[in-house]
Image (cartoon, rainbow, N blue to C red; front, side, top):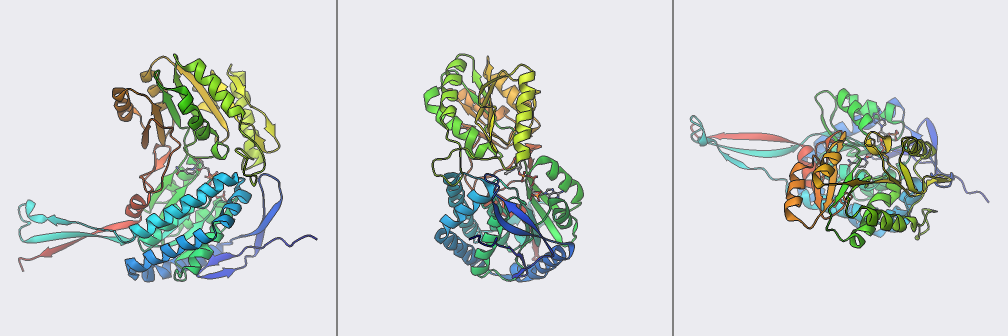
Length: 479
Ligand code: NAP
């Protein structure tokens, strides 16, 4: 017997509402229909923004301990339903279930950090008498909520990247209109249910699904929205920034992250970590390892060992706990990746592994002898493709890493402390990792990029700063 497909509802002003039209959500792996998703119309988005605008006074007045308690409750509800949450991510994003479980564990951490951070939004006092004319005056700063936060999120971490918006926004007393990626709306609706159960006031969180162009644009354009926090591709991010006027905007965008491997490094020790960095969630991670620069003295050995290890990855169903690599998010992305591989081949590059598809799965692919101008090198591949390049010095490698539109994170493996400091200083990125791949993030560290990788920082405390206004209060005791 066929079971009916679930019809999801918009979450606006604390109510679950039907939309006028729906789209069908399919599994990227099997094509199976997962749910019908409401396509918010203009009036739905209008209602969501109005509700968030109205609720902003209630949230701004809510004591910090109450905001923290709501976030703590979300943490405990998510802990209880962690298995279900991971299954939702695996189904809608084709994220291998083991990786999906790790995302849920991180989402729990993110909300925990947010609950803690809600209680320590501090200001400072300033001695104004440091300036002539400032005698007998004392100043203090307070951080006030910014108001309505418009949050637009991507498909690749549908639960944790939503948490990086909702966690700090609620911690600092704001309200939110959330537009999740069209391919991964189920994770967002699931989290909205948890916030509802945790006692978040009506209107403080609204979830509207629908096309990025229409729903996203409306959120960005509305004057009642004080800030837009966006994670996604540079193309969309730059468009948002151009339209946002004087709104505060934070942009967490893409990259073509790299690691450098120095001559004394123990290759056996680092190969498994590099394989994980390149192929986790099919390379669809903003800090996925895309470019590897190896000192010529270790190049042959590294290529051989890396290719063997990558060849052992298991491809298949995201719900199978043994699967390492599953389907890309869309057929279009499989075709784009294959076209980029073909372009590299035509230009003289060598495909040492993969380069083929199996359904919507692109097999783990290793490419050698690429030129920096090839798309697989200078664009963000966002697929299980990694390049291994030979360099004759670390200086040359640093130059090649920096020769990019992007600058999110970069790593270097070296036993030489002077080289490590040099690299930390010269790499033009938001985060440098010494003796690790760039594919590392824990949820309280400042995270964000330079150049086309973005603008502003996430990581709960840093996001709270972005989501609050600094107000100065001056006490004049001269009377
Ligand atoms: P995307 O295509 O840019 O979409 C991101 C979000 O923007 C989606 O919700 C999308 O809605 C929406 N959107 C699309 N067009 C819009 C418009 N004109 N105005 C407003 N919103 C619009 O990105 P994606 O493919 O989901 O995610 C992959 C990208 O995200 C990669 O570049 C990756 O590196 C980046 N990323 C960065 C970080 C970071 O922290 N730096 C983390 C994760 C991912 P629809 O889904 O409806 O189109």
